[in-house]
Amino acid sequence: MRGSYELAVFGSALTPIVDPVEIQHLDQRLIDAINWFGDAATDSNASASIVKYVSAIERLFFGKFEPGRTKIFAGRVTSVLDAFGCDENHCVHEQALAVYKTRSALVHGDNFPTEDELHKIERLAAALSRMCLLCSTQLYPMMSQAFDNPDPTTLEEVMKRIGIEGLDWLAEASGFSK
Image (cartoon, rainbow, N blue to C red; front, side, top):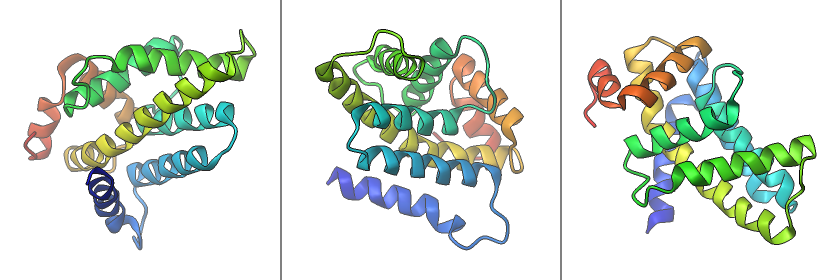
């Protein structure tokens, strides 16, 4: 059952950070993203859920703000999900663009989507956010192994490099195999 597998993955990722002496930077990011995801999943307002799902992904994959965020967002989501084999239909980039553009329209008040569009985008945002969380439970240990307690700047550098080179370099640097 897929749901129990995903729960086991989350549990194994959270176990080392339940009672740590010091919470590492990436551990805090994962906890924050899980909280955003949980808030989104339980929010009855589709607009608020979309914003929260996007916030979860941003917390996972962005160390700082940069102009051109829509394309960067879609690129990072695509790069990570593709690297872990989670973009079999090659539609993640298009979905991530649609989700982020809708989030921007909601936050900035531009061309408010219809109720049907909102619910469609909410489902896409939930699926993308869930997959980003699952991939991060594998990505973050590699980053932590390769870079001792990576900070936001290192996260940015790693995400950019994954977008250019894929994941093999990080798997090799961390001693993990893909």
